[in-house]
Image 1: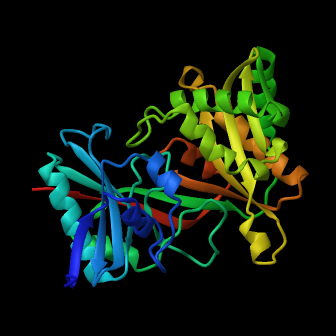
Image 2 (image 1 turned 180 degrees about the vertical axis):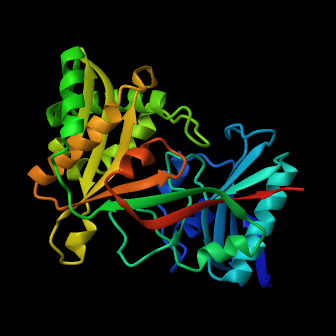
Length: 333
């Protein structure tokens, strides 16, 4: 007799297939899940049919104060009762592994998918933006989770390429050795390796940061390689050494909605910490806005920023918030 409802560990290929292809709850790519190397995976079955899932990471999570941190990711649940049972089970498993704080949802690392969209606003979802059903935040808050970190996306509704103050700054920095150039698509691998090295250094102090390997980084960006426009990826160099970058792609979801392709998604801004304080980030943002206009884009989305990140101060000069996200946590006692 099949149990009415049970949560089982994912141990076999057939279970992994069910885990990745939960009907109506968002498919996962099996090779991506494997590459994420979760420490445990669990699947909820209702009369033998998949009803929810989650993965855990607890062996290599980053430090967080006095806590030992555990991550809950790859999460999906059919309804509130399933979500409650899964999250209770996840917290019990993390507690058993010696964790004192659970963070969710996060797929093992902030380089991957994490946080929930909590305030949707009126604009449609943009390319590369994580999405979830609007009722999912209540799954977590209804089970004792509270906000651990907040994020937002902001939009520049009308891009103005001219900023005399930043132009004067750029001219002064140019005389000292700074250049900003477009991405060289013919040297894709070498350029992406330079971006990876800058990212490793620049993001070290980011919230819940832990590094990933170059292979995973290259795999992530290979997936969007066909959509990269060289003039919309900018490399800052100091006397020929790469020290920063700005990475943007068109909002390709506009095409799916049969809309004019007039919005740019500004995905990443990074400057090597050795060059902090020289306002290279401000110059890169200004140059990106100029590039957006020259490529025919009227709007620029500053995407998925932690509300305590330094880049938000630059963004605030240009953009208005239109979407918010939350990463949740729960103390395990």
